[in-house]
Image (cartoon, rainbow, N blue to C red; front, side, top):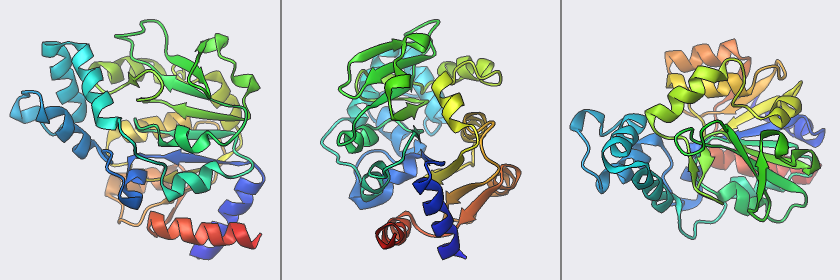
Length: 280
């Protein structure tokens, strides 16, 4: 069952009809030391800031408290510190970003490892979510592969890119954009149902294509909301590499969105999918 599912995924990628959707769990590979979950990230943020006990384990609420009492710049600098360093792309990044046909990558976390892995490709760029508290009236900033600013919304040059890296939560590189506090998400949630915060290029590329979720959980309402809205009007067939037994809410979400769960580890996926690619 696993082998046939992976072969179907490989065929979908070969045809340019599959879109990787990367979550924080990808950073659990290859001893990467960057925060690989909301829990590890909020621990980093609260290690240097006094936050009430009741919100110390809630990422959005903790970031909001720091923003309210220590200024937004403190949140931004703490996030940048957490995701800076010399971390290199994992084996999964290298595998996926090396695929010949890759029109879109969705990266729902804050690190810059996909950017690093994409640097060997030609004609790619980034679409990153930005905070309304810092860029009021703009939902997306576009960047070229070298990190130079390509504009906002219609000014983006995404039609020139063969691969679009979409980072709905922002990213540490190139300009430290982060959607992380409760107020950041309230702004997006208010508009996301009518798709306003989602780039036009993403809406176009996702149409009729399948998503492969890697390093993702769907245990919180926010995680499910973003995955639901980003995958709207796509294919009726998707996959998720998820070894852990899903929660009741996750299982319902997988069923409702026609996401087939493949119960293997990410490292096993890398080795088995690589073998299929080499065999072809």
